[in-house]
Amino acid sequence: SRIAMAQNRALLLLLLLCPPLASAFLTPSPLATHPSHSRVFSQATSRARRIPLSSLRLSSATFPPFLPKEMEEVEDEDCVTMAQRIVRTPVQVSDSTAGDAILTSYAGGAAAGEDKTPIVCLHGFDSSCLEFRRLLPRLEAAGAEAYAIDVLGWGFTQRDEGLVRDFGVEGKRDHLRCFLEQVLGGRRAVLVGASLGGCVAIDLALEYPDLVERLVLLDPQGYVEGAPMGGQPKFLQDIGIGVLKSKPLRMFANKIAYADPDTYGTEDAMRIGRLHTLSPPGWKEAMRGYMDGGGYKLSESIARVPQSTLILWGDQDKILDPALYADRFVADLGKDKARLEMVADCGHVPHLEQPQRTAEMILDFLGTRAPAPA
Image 1 (spheres, rainbow, N blue to C red):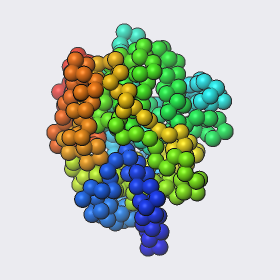
Image 2: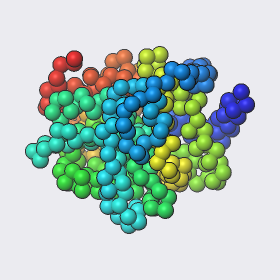
Image 3: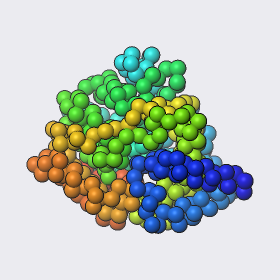
């Protein structure tokens, strides 16, 4: 179709102008150079165009009004259940971040208690708290006080351009700090960061160590620095951002994220992964703001992280090769502080592909027993 041809031309242009942005759905990584990726992209593009409308489940569930209407097409019951739990609460941030309180979306807190250490899950690049739809309930089943928050600029957190002034690293850090202080009462938390969410967690742990008890890093980005297309002309950024939102590219990234893409890299998973690009408004502006902010640059700072850290890595991660990065994290953090566990039969997202095993490893690290799987 003409639309598909236009999307593919746009992707080719994007690869020529800025290869990292084409891979930025999860991380600016060697996405475009992996030998199997061209075949996977072709298959993903074809499948993304063949979603039969008759197969879409029209849910009778009631969802928060800030979620897009496309949420009603989602079939994943874990996602449906979690989406119904998402709430928004105003978080007052610094004037440099926003002109007023930001309505911040998150799920969790079912087992809250003043005597508990909260667990706060931080999603990856251009994603949402729904990324933790399989992990969050498993942590809660063990009695943990767990949350999944939408990082400023992504997810379903308010991002009105006239309100938010800083979508970059400093804005994201300030917003997360204020969430921990205002919503969780300033209690020291365990931060669980997935992919780029690992950078968000590390950055806060370095700048506000009194707010962070421990770190859990899931296939973390840390040594791939910067943001794609930062400082480029607006029209080039808009081309890249438009392709990033497209179903073919989302499906491509969806497929290579899993060790078992046939089971997990479905059209429904792709649909869930792009919901936050549809609502609330301001996604494109937030993406451009993050790009121009320069992204995270933490390579030289990781060794200064003071907290005990658990690193979980999928043994078949095609996005961030554990052979390149996993041992480097341990070496920089120090064996006295860092513990590395490989997750078998798993790609880049252990919290989605192996959620039970991931929950068990996290709870063991925190000294909490996980309930037996049903």
